[in-house]
Image 1 (cartoon, rainbow, N blue to C red):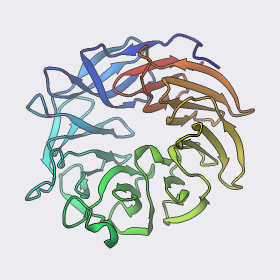
Image 2 (cartoon, rainbow, N blue to C red):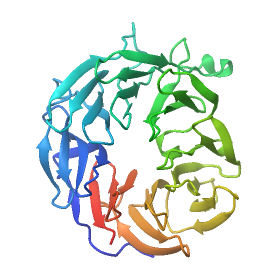
Image 3 (cartoon, rainbow, N blue to C red):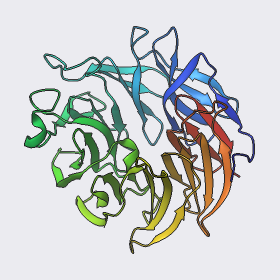
Length: 379
């Protein structure tokens, strides 16, 4: 099905601004985003997605134009916001008042192997807002007490001995890609990348490693069910599904290779796997497979995108799936029968890529983005 369907509610921001990181609010009309302009430091802002306008801006994250926000996270009660910057600083904000609560630099290193190494690419905040976590490319991840700013624990991961000589620094530290708390706040999930990657689960209160590290992904090859009971991650060896409470692998799909995106339904019953294979002299294969996690059965093999799958998102009730591709399209699928319901054009520019998808909590809006956002009504 070619791109068509209803026109978007909004495409924003304009050519003078970019949204580098964003997160939908409970009220589906709004998102919080890291707003970047050509002549100002990045700052968090609340955008009205129906009107495509910023309605509230917090203070700048840094002091220089080149100080950018690389990551942000909002607590479940929408009281506290954490932002991580390219300058290696964390900021904690009172999201309701807009006041800056704390600025802190992560533990300094004597030197960095290349420009941009101190940047904080991953942040998270516990559902009750009592703790926050962050990681950076030199392999350092830590958890802090939100009220006092005290570091509770920290950890690093290193590449295996066979790859250490190729690592960008002698210690062979891995790059932190993703940090997330489980919905109950008991566990912290971290993915690391460098020569294959790794996924680890920690006790949020103590930093104790839960289970064994498993071959891990980058951000789009990692997914957690909304109830927090299952986590999926992809690597060269296929897709593994973990129980974060114990760290145990509860399902293994070694046949799923060349994975570019993952999503778990809210209850963890279904796993969506985006794959893209392109071999010289052969036709590229782009597909999304919907798998029953318990039985391992492939329920649907969805083929409509012409290029790599950028992201996937289930509706909260599990009845529909949204897929976004590097072919500038967003597609909506009915999971009762595996039929494509809508095919939507992401941006007017033909070479645009969908890198991030979300469905609002009430299921009323579909959001797709890279450095711009496009929003459609879903019902």
